[in-house]
Image 1 (cartoon, helix red, strand yellow):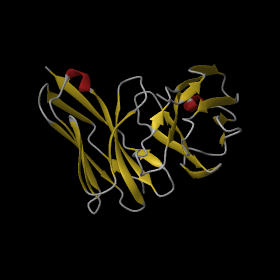
Image 2 (cartoon, chains in turn red, green):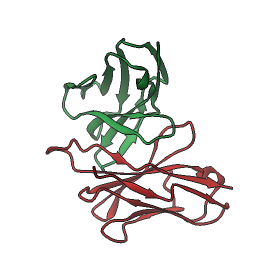
Image 3 (spheres, rainbow over the protein chains, first blue to last red):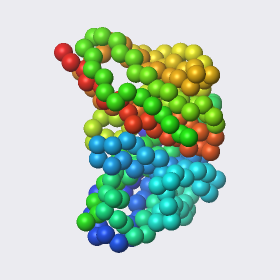
Image 4 (cartoon, each protein chain N blue to C red):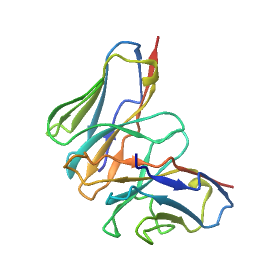
Length: 117
Length: 109
């Protein structure tokens, strides 16, 4: 069964460092997402991406964050200068369009746990 | 606003039925999804509604009323493994899928 893959599974970094989290969405999906979940808290929407551009971003997704789809398979989240409060699990997800055989649900990767010291 | 509201916690007994409610902002609505999340894991898809009414999928059913901005997830014949968080998620016009804070369900013997 096709799946979303994320790397690294866990990254420890120093405050102020740049971090790049990588994702390979399911190949025939068109919509890509990043979420974060601070331990014990809700799944927070960061950004949605479609047709090679951001379609929506949340108030969390400030200038420190950026996303890229550098080639036909990867989807990356960059945090330019990490802060302590960026420590969280970051989930990548992708989905097919609504309608047809698939309801357009999100398929999640297993997450990248970021620890900022 | 993007408010998605659901109860924080619920408890039910093995074999019983439980209903988890969710209310959401109706403007710019494109669909309502339910996910299950076990601690330390990614969310997994359970059910979705785009049109009003009930969608049944085995032990899980989901209901939607678009005019009321209301959905519920119904879990029947509860099993211990159903203890998890249940997340209501709203798909907006700009492809944004936003989640409620989740309802932590505890199933007791």
